[in-house]
Image (cartoon, rainbow, N blue to C red):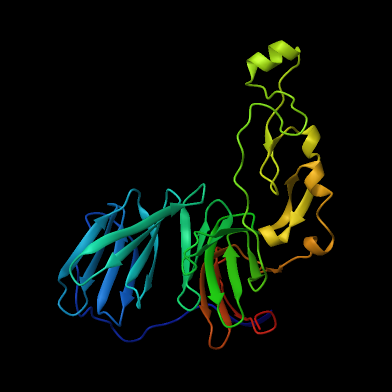
Length: 312
């Protein structure tokens, strides 16, 4: 990536006057979105309400109460679906009509709040970033419920952008890293973690399995999980670490010894490139036309990046 410019101050010399005001919420707003095609104003607030207004008349068209305070919004004009991410880690899909709203579905894959959403209307993919440092790709268009996890950051995800023409995902984090993911590869879903009272490799009891500890006269072991197969294993049977890029693990993670032997060097080849922005990123905006990325950080500096060397 090439750093094009450093921008510091923008001075506005003309006075702006609001053309309309909307009383949308009873507490602080958390997100707003203007849908030009529908002449709608979408908003969420700390009162756990999602509302939408007519931008021309100011009339409130409806609202929906979410289970937790909403943090981010995305809207699909074709289907009139709105995607709402909240601080519990849940994503809610609503269907908006002119004067009513219906719940389509909810899904949860994050262990912390959703911080950002990105919707690709072409391939009908929804990407969610979270404070748990992970990104999840939800295959909405495939209607198979596929969810792919990406692990490549050490702090909360601040923004994600998708370049559908090259099938590359750009993610920015509070750790200062900018990661460009190649999504044009056949990725694998991460397995669900299995439950067991003993190691599924050596059958040694875990520390809460008092009966087996008593019967075998052995001290219980701590439970871990293999990131490749999902089995519950002890530390002795999962002494190895490996990257599994096709499963989204660009950093080394715990795997059981038998799975470690099956991972080839080709399968460890990275599917993402990592770049240091030299500041803790707070806000991001991506221009897909010129392939420019604008970042702002805690250092009070704006940086404009030319992404053409890494985004095809």
